[in-house]
Amino acid sequence: MILEDVNLDGQPVRMTLSGGKIAAIDPSPGPASRTILPLPVEPHVHLDKAGTISRCRPEAPGLFGAIDAMARDKANWTAEDLRSRIEAGMQEAWQAGCRAIRSHIDWDGPAAPLAWDVASVVAQDWASRMPLIRASLSAIDVVGDPDLGPAIAARVARDGQVLGAFIYRHPDLANRIPFVFDLAEKHGLMLDFHVDEGLEVEATGLDLIIAEATRRGMGDRVLCGHACSLSIRPDAARAIDAMARAGVALTVMPTTNLYLQDMAPGRTPRLRGLAPAQELRAAGVPVLFGTDNVRDPFYPMGVHDPLESLRLAALSAHLAPGSWVDAITTTPARALGLADRPVAVGEVADFLVLPAPDVLAALARPGVPRMVIRGGVPQP
Ligand SMILES: [Zn+2]
Image (cartoon, rainbow, N blue to C red; front, side):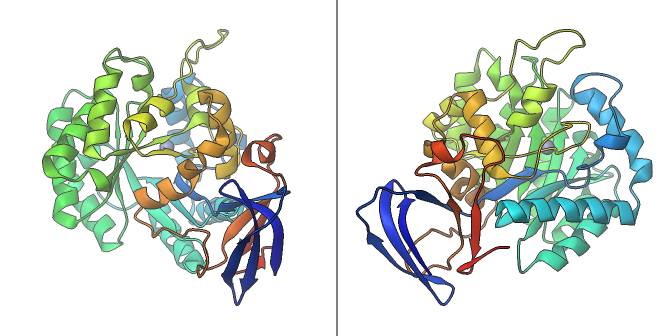
């Protein structure tokens, strides 16, 4: 297959594919009519929750109303229900062109929940196509408890997955966060935190994570998500600088932040809740964009598609999307411990072809059209 006049990293080129690989990339006179992007990596979703909104409506606004609604819905989480919803989410991400996906799975006690087992079976089915990395998601009260956390970490380690925690304004974080790091160090685990997902200046769990990662030299194994309070903290610049020095990465999730933050009945939100992506990246923090919740009480709309996350990030954080493609491709790949897969001669021919001359034009309309090429073959 030959792709004429495509935009690769801003240059018009002619790409030749052969035997499932990229055989040649040559300059072409242009102008480019289509744009090539690496396959995206989705760093943060909740496949156990996705697709429940039709039966599960929050009774109170904001994050904690959604958490309560989701807890009530768990009576419906049979193996069959979980399997069909997790599979649907995987199909959606696959159609979007993802090369890998990390899903958090709610984990409320010491033993693995049914959703973990079901997601593990789905992951096996998909292993050769699109790896499904699982991160346990427990309240810091649970995974940071010396009576409960060790069993979670041992099981996560046995399955080769990621240890996670939900952290928001807890009085004992100074002990519980180091304990979670102890577990990760003991088992050689990567960590993924939901942290400071709210708009109170006292929400500073991020600082303790950064301090612990710095002290132990573990920054490259730690991914944080949200850090909404950074958008209103007067000392945000200091925290951002420490985060950059620690090498801790941050996933920003525009859908859930715009939807849940500063939410009150009958009142238009004034605050948008997004961590300051531009300042974070300028300081050297690896910034990722994640889709987070899809059609569940945390966000009742959406689709598992990193290009839609980039599109919304461009709008909500005032970004030039062509300069932020790395936030859905190479940066999440590194944060998740995946090998780089550049669009280059000799590499497997896996990439997206967007029917527009550049990224901005490609993202102009919702439902971003694309052709997904995997192993040199267009995906049906
Ligand atoms: Zn999340």
